[in-house]
Image 1 (cartoon, rainbow, N blue to C red):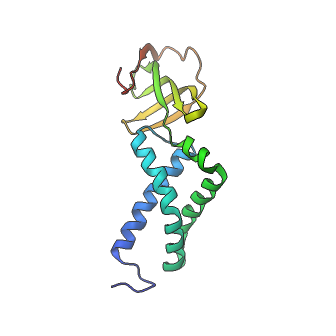
Image 2 (tube, helix red, strand yellow; image 1 turned 90 degrees about the vertical axis):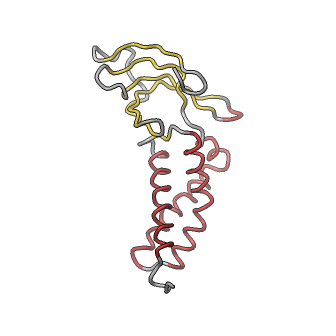
Image 3 (cartoon, helix red, strand yellow; image 1 turned 45 degrees about the horizontal axis):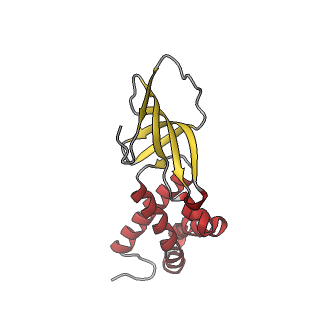
Length: 168
């Protein structure tokens, strides 16, 4: 049994899970780390939108002192959803997909320059050439979105096409 000022273990676990979801959301929105898996990105964006009012209200009502800061990311997500609108928010859920791997770093195979596209629904597609550092299949760190045409001697040209499943 918990009292108003002493949250139980389930409440603390819920706060931890929501905090991780908000962290991944803001890392993706600020383009510090990109979520490469569409299902993961969709789940995080939808969880943020549906959990934000609940978390903000429950945090302000239930928690005291420093723990009330849990409500700040929830309020920021609500503000972003209002500013972007439903279509803007839906367009951001789409992930960047690699069309062609142009260059691979000789020493670090996770560092690549790729030609990518993003489906933005009825508005068509966006395209970019980006230098990315891949952190497995789920995350990528964008280092530059306008790399030089010939990056240098440490790079090997590959020009490998990627199919719709992400395989070379």
